[in-house]
Length: 367
Image 1 (spheres, rainbow, N blue to C red):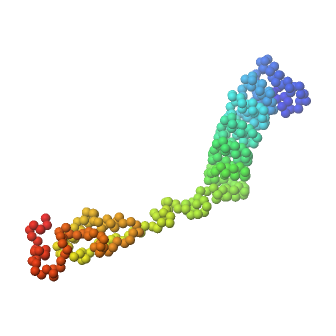
Image 2 (image 1 turned 135 degrees about the vertical axis):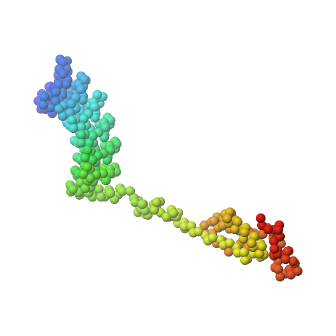
Image 3 (image 1 turned 90 degrees about the vertical axis):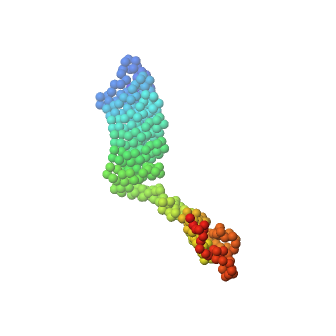
C-alpha cells in the first residue's frame, strides 16, 4: 500500500487514490509499522520514500512510524528520499522534528553527503537550512565538499563554501577537496575552490600536491589553472607592491631608508677649542686657564663639548676661535682679571710683584 502507484504502472487509479485509506485500515487492524523486508530490510516508510509516495509517508508519520529506522545498508527513509529525488517525501521528513538530519549509513554517509554526491537539485541547500552538519564526514574522512569536488558538483560546492564548509579539510588519506578536484579533472569546482582561497600547498599521504596529481592524470587545464592562481594569489614579496612599484621592507631597509627624500644626517665637525696663544694673558693666567679647562673636561660640563653635541644636523661649522667673534661674550676669562692686559714693555718702572711674574706668595699657593 505504501508503494502502490509510486512509479509502478498498476493501471488502477482507484487503488492509487485509496492507498492512504488502505494504510489507515491496516494500522487500525494492528499492522506493525516497522516490519522490514527480508532482502533489503526496508520498512513501509522506506518504500514510501523510494517510490515518492508523499501521501503514504505523511500517513505513516502521523501514525508514529520511526523516521530514523535503518535498512540493511544503514539507510534511513531520508537517505531513501534523497537517493530517489523524492521531493515531496523529502520535505515531509525534514519538517518532521524526530528526523535525524545527520543520520549515518554503515559507511558513514549522511543525507547531506549523499545529496552532494548525487547532485540532487535543491536538497542540499534545504538540508543546510534545516541545520544539517556541513562538515560531517564519512568513514573515509570525506565531507560533502570532498564529494562535490570529486563529482564536479559546482552548485553544491558554492553553497557549502558559503555556509562555512572547511575548504582545506583532509580525508583519511590527507586529501583536500582541491586535491580531489585536481585528481578527478573537476575544472569548474577547482576554480571555485581557488576563488575561495583554498590552500594549494597541502599534500596527501604520498606527499603529492594538487598540481602533481593533475599532472600525473594529464589534466593540463587544471595544471595551468593552478599555475595561474599561484602567480595571481600569492602574497607580494618584500620590495614589490601590488602595482609593481618597489616598497620598503622594514627589516631590510637602512636606518634612514624610511625617511623618503630626506637626506641622511651628516655629523657636523667638532668645534675647535680656542687656542691659548690667542689670549692676551700672562703665564700664570695661562696656567690657570689650562687647569680650569682640564677640570671642566673631566666633569663633562665643558660648554665647548656640549655645544658640539647639541648642534643641529647640517648646521654651519662652528668658528675656529670664539674670541674672534665680537658679538660672543668671552667664555674663558680669568676671574682675577680686573683690567685689560698691558704689555710688559709699557710698564718698565713697575715692580715684578705688581705684574704677577714673581714667585707665588704663601697665601697664593694652591691648596
